[in-house]
Length: 305
Image 1 (cartoon, rainbow, N blue to C red):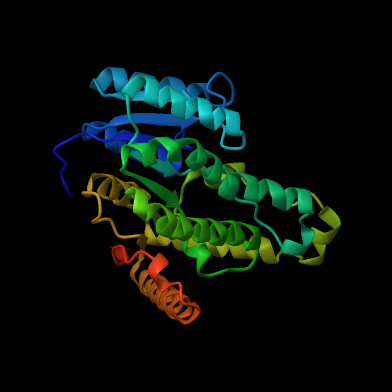
Image 2: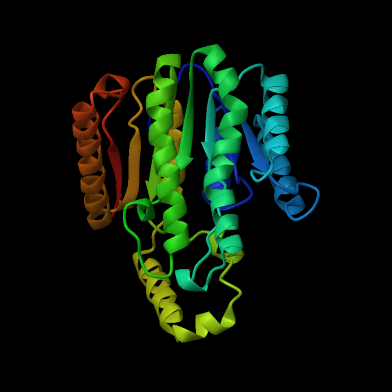
């Protein structure tokens, strides 16, 4: 793993559990100044906030909990202001907060679909909107979005989730090109499905009648997926390790896409990513706007055996 000469100031959303929790703990242990962003630090996530605070105190780490609800712009603004007031700068934003709404697309109402997009897509937009004026003024910084292999491959019963991650991928790429002149990087980490706690807050559609039309298909799909994960014994720490690597790489050397997945999935998703990059170059060239695209760094991969 890479080593930096200067600790980064890092804000990680959705840090109560899963990838976020593993990432803030790993970054803090490596000497970075870390702000673990949680919503409801005095409510639903009170226990997680207390555990993170105790963890930092026990190990003597520079890790602080900050209140941040990604569905609220004012909350995002306050959290970023808190970081800047405490640390004096902000180097890295990791947009990890997310949710999954599993089920047949037909069964979801537009309001339910909106809530999925509100967390996974608009949440990152709000946090980045709060942070970007400061990153641009500094002339450096990096936005890291936690995408998914689902942004490239849509499987049954995950259409809303896949759509949200595809949208987040498009925003990440737009930020990448638009922010490069200001010295700000925008990158994505695309993990395969890993056994984390995201499923505990899953929100299936409430339309029971339309769910019934699909029989037990969704149940069998989920059982097959979770069974494969258990057999493979996949470790979500691989995603945290990839995030730490990105944080610690020097500015200008970070790959814009990092796939963390078992080998077969990695190769397939990487191929899709390369094809998309080639298409972007070809289309922009044909439209006469290729000069507005940053070349950046090629994508990389983290194969999990």
